Amino acid sequence: MPFSLYYEKKILGKVFGNEAISFATNGSTGSLYIGLSTSTPTENDASSDYNFDEPTGNNYSRKMIQNTTGSGASDTWAAAAGDPHGEVSNRIAITFPTASGGTWGTISHFGIFDHSSDDGPDHLIAWAALSANKTVGDGDTASFAIGQLKIKFS
Image (cartoon, rainbow, N blue to C red):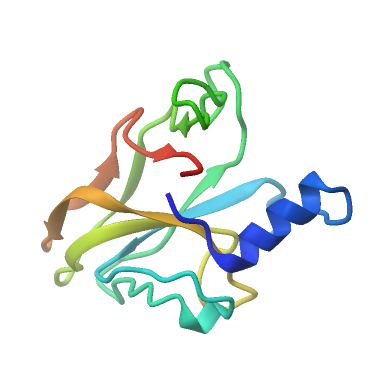
């Protein structure tokens, strides 16, 4: 799973002791936001350059999740394990609002953001392709089952 250049620098800075990483956005400490894209994202530094094309209108919004890791029933992410590099996966189902008033298009990728929308200090953290493209039509509900989102360094 590629990470954005912005967050690659943040992670290196955190590991080597000179960078704080905070997900305190919109007053919600520890929140992350899952977004859907109809295009293939890129690693560019600038938030306007990610090529992450989210649906607009028709009841689409990024899905807020709490950024908690562990084995508790309320934890969002399973602790890193498995794959030689380690991997985290979602411990809860992640369900978006139902598309209403039109389609969201053909979704090919998901991304994890540090802000609820692209109208603020918005940074794409990481992204990946879906295992299969999914067309979200009027009345459809996009979701990720438990364990379906897998995040690892590659």
